[in-house]
Length: 128
Image (tube, rainbow, N blue to C red):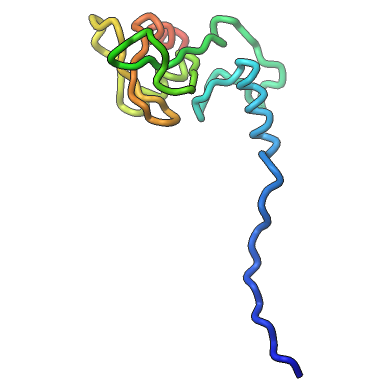
């Protein structure tokens, strides 16, 4: 009788690609309906099959470098102003000093530190 082979432990096979939800969310990002915030509150939901798409809600902003506000961005992520304000408030940031022309923020995805203009911040606050 030949010796018994040792059993290999079973592992889940690698996924063939992104899930259906990931594909849908990526297409929504490409169309501008969803921002890069993992908890985007503006993008369509499963409960709303025909989303209301208002141009002012779909606007997205980038996070600018602290030393050179308005020039470029600190990362490739973009956000709806309301999503960025919401994420910053959850993280404990708030932009309370209304005299400052820029509000210091941290990217909710990669945590790069930068800023947005006071107008972009206030636009997010007003649409919450």
